[in-house]
Structure formats: C-alpha cells, structure tokens
Image (cartoon, rainbow, N blue to C red; front, side, top):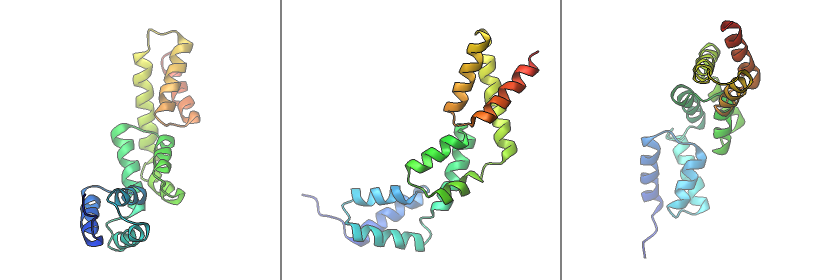
Length: 158
C-alpha cells in the first residue's frame, strides 16, 4: 500500500502544479484531495498558495477569458459558463470578461458570422440564417449581437 503524502510533499507537488499553468481554487482543491489530503490540510495549503501568489483566481479568470476568446473564439456567455463550472466567483468572472475589448469582440463575431454565412451560401435563405445563428450561439455570443452581425451580412449581400 502506498504511503500518504506529508503536507510538505503535497505542498511541493501542488506548487509545481500551480507553477506549470494558472489554476483556479477548485482545480487545486480537487488535486489536493486526489493526492489524499484531508480537508483541514487542503484549506491550509490553499491559504499558503494564495499568500505566496501561486494561486490567484482573478488572474486565472483573466487569462482564461482572454485565452479562450483569442484562441478558441468563444463568446462571453460560453466563457462565463465555463468559469462558473470551475466555481470561479461572479466578481472574478466579470473581471475576467473585462479582458476582452468590445471592438475586438464584435470584430471576431463579425468574422465568424461572415465565414459561416459564406460556408452556407448554397443553403436556403432561412436555413442559412438559422444555422449561422445557432453556430454563433453555440460559440457563446449573445443573441442581440448575433442578430446585428447577421443583419449587417444581409444588407451587405444585397
């Protein structure tokens, strides 16, 4: 049978885990439990990591939001849901979403809408509009912004 880790061994492992990539409190807590730590040890180690700035949930939310928007072209709705699933506070979620500039956001939405619209050019008009809307909603963009983007595509194609 494997010996349980001491608090110091767990601390070294989790410090390395946090140093490799930015993490949220939930991920670190789950990892510590997976390492066999008890609740009071987990809370002590979390506090220590926060004090030493290995763990910063606001920084995590900012990096997550910016990265998922720029790399995966996710909209704010999808990013917010993903952060909620990781139990990030609503304050930190709002802070993370501020990483995304409004002009860049709308420009990305417009590019995605245009690409999808072009890919569906052989489809019937209403099908084309419905599929483009569904695709952009799945990417996490807000319906009013999607409608505006599609409207500008329709007026531009006349």
